[in-house]
Image (tube, helix red, strand yellow):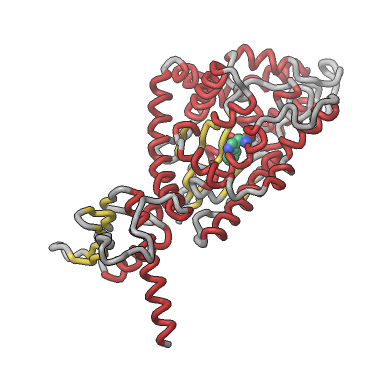
Length: 435
Ligand code: TRP
């Protein structure tokens, strides 16, 4: 099975060069690996926690989507979607909320920081805390678990949230007795923390030291680079490049040869002003063509929209069957005759039926029916054994775990699978009694 890699970006602002070098570029490169399935989404439900300006949420979402596309994400393979287009994530959030310990949420960094700030300002500890902020890690866990992501590339500040997602996944799996959820791993890329801002500290909006990515065009890039802090050595004076913000940003866009050459020239006295012009040219080589695509996309919101809708459909195709299994498992089920209540006068529910048969082409198929309804039909297999394996995988993992030539109502299918699992368990018990 391929590895699922997933990450979300909260849609409250625009992206800067540090986001591109630290997150976008490596994520897009990683999404090209053959055995990787990538999921990228605009976390707009999360945006509501810290932003009550609807236009800003919308503009940011469009800009971030356009940025992913302009930077070359291949949406034939990777999934790009808007979190709020998959409402299943809210339902999963509730299921997870019900098994999450409050004490664990008390320990979340974002919540503790809000409390500390309030206390420092002489206010009630929780005075600035909404339930959204408080439950933020559970929504994030749902984002990850809904797609059974294996790896989650994030910045250091998010590692705690991934650990919470693991915990809650484990608790849920244990409580309901099946491996519904993969336990995700955080992946903190060294690169993610690296790019310095104009003043040499980490590039971040909160330090107001960012180089914008596309917004403001080439001009904004040039004027930001002009503000990079350097020492006061003049033209002709030898300069030590190592450790400067300028050289670190340059490195992020240069080949090893170009890096060596820039260092040599600075040591030989290249003026800082000249070096900055070269830095702009170096960044432009990579970003210029992307910025042009970005402008085209921003002028064509329908195209962005149709990409996002297609991504959401693919995401929901994965989310829906898992949620059907979860609903069944926790007892949010269709009404049925309860065990022990099947008295003679109660009409018997039609039990689900499994048939294995061979088509004229000699291929083996497995079909799960209930009454007249076909709930699941396997693809054609070379052997009956493969058919049996398919059925086992379907019983263990639900509709999401196998390929289906035909699928019926997901709720009915899950209910039938529960019945089959119960039959199997019954048979096991009978065997154990005999032995
Ligand atoms: N909380 C993340 C941030 O602020 C964004 C996010 C939301 C996310 N859901 C996610 C990241 C799921 C990774 C996986 O950066």
